[in-house]
Image 1 (cartoon, one colour):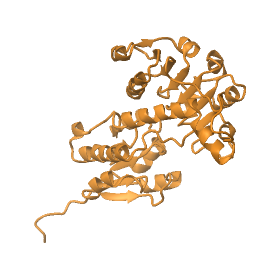
Image 2 (image 1 turned 90 degrees about the horizontal axis):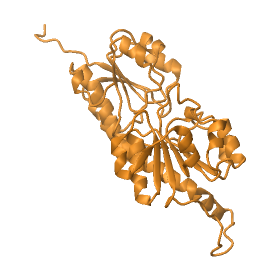
Image 3 (image 1 turned 90 degrees about the vertical axis):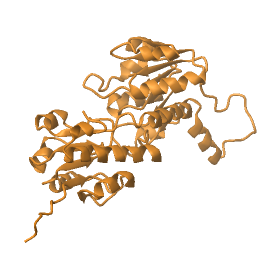
Image 4 (image 1 turned 60 degrees about the horizontal axis):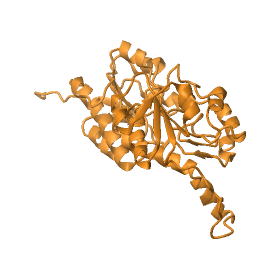
Length: 330
């Protein structure tokens, strides 16, 4: 009989096979991996089946981790780590009630997402996709025309940011280099750090009324759900550019489509919408004054690799009995 008993490895459910190797390799060395084989969201039935008996869940924002999943997993589940900064897909109350640790990845995606928002704003305001498409349609008829494809510039403009959190703050810092005249923001509290780019805290209605560019970076809550409705768009300038980098549910999409069609606002740039993926027959995709991206805010190789490492280390810290060593937890 052996003098020592080989300890079994903890079991982890990873809901996608296509997460970066940087995180996968950390876990493969120490854990038994249960995973979904297809590079697409795990079907609910598979999630409920494969989660049984696992010690940890490595999930992404398309996975709804709620009471039903936790019941299916069983009492040995110690940690749920999400490779995301948002937590709307997690039932935080149910997790905390069970004493299950919650890991996420804030901070690391701030720069990548802010860069994407600035790029989306410029692509929308300067009509980049529309202009590029015009070439292939044979609409570029002369070397230059005085008003063809004219958009709106940032220099001398007023920019309003709804929700000045980490990413909103970084967007503001980036835009300060474009010679904007004024930067307004909404927040529960005054942000002293906004003084470095002369940011001014205002009420939402004032921001909508005065801004040439409205950038939405607020978290999705019961208060912010559908906050951008028909009335909100009517308060904006008819030359305003609307950019959403938060969550699709913050916007009444039908009202946005109406506002774009009626020229209530000039244009919109969206990295988030409802539903995702957006149907190919969506009215948004038929509008020249709307730029739609497939939710790629944090999509840089460097950022996604670091997100995968943080998620893996969040899991290992708990399984090793040192939850205080989690890189980022709620």
